[in-house]
Image (cartoon, rainbow, N blue to C red; front, side):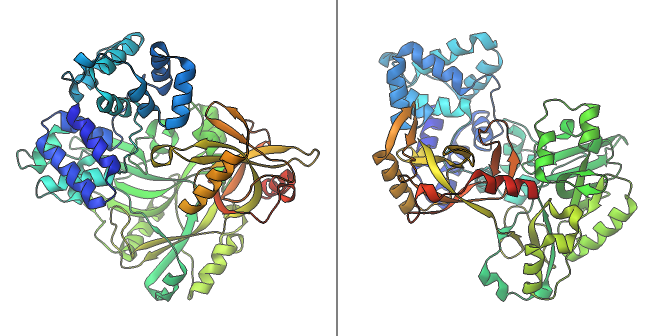
Length: 540
């Protein structure tokens, strides 16, 4: 555990990507199985403990110290694991007793839910401050050390001759603690089998910028960017002729059980890349409709009937066992068109291409998709995708191949109501903001959203200073900020869309809100009213 704690500590303070890679590679090289595999699972988000929640940790710590003292400490520190690690009173003579990652994983699996708090308390007693911090980060899953799953897999490639692409090809079929993967990378075992149905790491895009318009339009294709959830539909037959089908999220999670109506219709041998949507009576619905199905705890016949799932297919990655990813997008598109025509009865459809000769044509389509896509698709289009005809299908976010050019966001001027400290590097700043607009029938501000990004570091310092100097009350770690008609702070908030929400006093909730700019020039009384948002909600 000491070695893992030291790794997390150094990664948290290492800003350089190459520095993080070196730290990870050294840890994987020097740490034996299965501990290094459990560490890898934690770093890639593949390790979770169902019954170990932050609420349980809070309950444990208030048994050891004054509840008010803990609340004040948590408010000051801003991170649960760090606060508990510092405030926990343990026996110095027992600190740093031997405790491995395998001990933790096996201990949790072998312990009944009711006995877990006592087990965690025993471990916290056995560790020093850094060990306690690492333990709590591990079991709560909130590492926040600037390491992505792909970066961790790239570090594995430093152990042998396998490339990160090779590792990602077998990754989905592997499971913690990955002893077979480590053995293969180090040349001590065979390549792990990927199975009959496999997930391919998706190809991602970059945001389109004005300077990109210098590129030659004839080298690119364009299609609609649908407002759903990126998925992969995979189906194949194994060596015994048995059919297998899966639906994967963008991160490789198997979500087949949530969409049995789709999976049952995968009567093909292929891997398709597309967007999960809801399609009713020929109309592709907005994300708000899809979310109504996503939020269901169980899938009933009524749910399937009311919210029929549909996949708008962008790409084909394999067919009949043949890997198509090395082909150009133009070649794959031809294969995909033939595939879609042969499976017209399946709940999948080909994402149409947009005809254009100049970037101005594409900009017009992006600005008015209803004119180009048809009214039935308007609600589900959030922009356009631009893809180089010659591009192979590459994992990750390679430069110079795919771009996304989203429609201009909606904006509203809203008043800052509440602020809360951030986490990690932002734990010293009030960086999470709740904002509201004026109700039309009364001089009252009602919350419509919460955002924690969009501003620069310099603006964060300015907002933090404002929050501290204009706090009118506190609710635990949350500060209520002055928001009188003539005194307060106004944000221009950008957001992708709206949906009805019974959890918000305003009755609406924003999708992907962010702070576009600070309106130092505007008084709160001049902020927008709720009617502006409800009118937009009716339009969409």
